[in-house]
Image 1: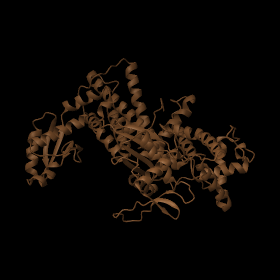
Image 2: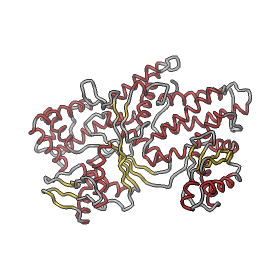
Image 3: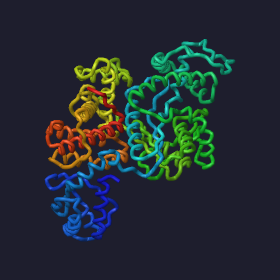
Length: 582
């Protein structure tokens, strides 16, 4: 149990000893630090329940608080706001307790199994800037859930079915009609495809352009996509080879973003569960026929806007994205039986996922207590406020965006510190960190503007600032070690900058918990900046390595080590690395 949770339990027990029941207590940092470090507002809540004056209740509680030497400077403000501070003895003990392992400053949550669906790359297409947020936010939430004790299964959920498969195969037929897989008597023998992964970046766009200009080609592409669903041997083998080829570049880009997946599955993997899905829907009796299509009505009386039915099967027998998403849920329940499934995708898909979730519940393909949660995110825009595009007006590829930020980072590296052999790797680490931190800083549901120059700066609220500060603490600790300076125990709070760091560290468990509840890293990103800035103020005020008071020097080095370890942990949750030097 974390120190802040222990404090909150002590306050809760004091409430109960005074005759007041509360489900929980949350110690919130005071907005009036001149009155106290924390403020308790519960006397006002109790007054309404117990029909007593809040000032009377506040006086009863403060008398009990004063009996515990953990608390100091206890006072009442206004109509019953209780202000408290923490004793130096408690804060010193807290830091020493977490100095060996900063994960002792984390409250583990009850075990739950979560499937997390993020990534969403489309096979045979280059990843573009729109794919950043799902991979980045999803990966960070996945890491956060793990560190708080959840079991997670992450799935990239590739877009490997639908019209794009027909477009790509059709373009391949036009370019390479002699391929054996296109012959009518093809029996499944192996063959090599005459393209590279770079060719795919041309094949889909050109094929897409042709289908937009020619209705006959569009219908042919649709038919090919349908034939793939039905199991056409030649098309399926070719399409699987194309998927494997495209995955090489997709995996490279996700690796650069430090996005990892337990499952590299997609829509095609769900087709084996479609017969089971349809049988379940028939057994439950939720399917009806509408103009030849099979649909599920999901509208309820409380809906205030239109809620279209879920189309499970088209009149021509083809399956929709909703079909594959529902079949995917069937597979996930069968294989993993998760407590929850979280989906990280664009905010504009909220209605679609509401339809899918309602269909899943109405068709009873999930347990009654299984949580299905849509975690939508806003758009990343350029400095003009519009989605990132190339000069020719096309959507910017994700790899090009990474290179853009990497080049900005390269300009700022101190070449007197970083040798030429490490320049590219250091710029890569800093560029990725700049991109990821800027993306996690706003609440996930909001749009935001990404300025490559601003967010690559070593000053301000940026990834490189956090990396630079963390590397500097590491350098300090290494110098102390090289000079034979040992430090094991934090002994005394010397000044306010020490105490500010300790109070900030106390906040960590609540910040992490709130991040997981909201499925957003914005408060954790803010907190990491706050802790780092607070430490930097402390660092500038104290000459640690030349301090003559050895007890004080040891205490300062213990603080430095705890902040360093905490920063590394928080940066790792965000999927951000630190270079050796910068």
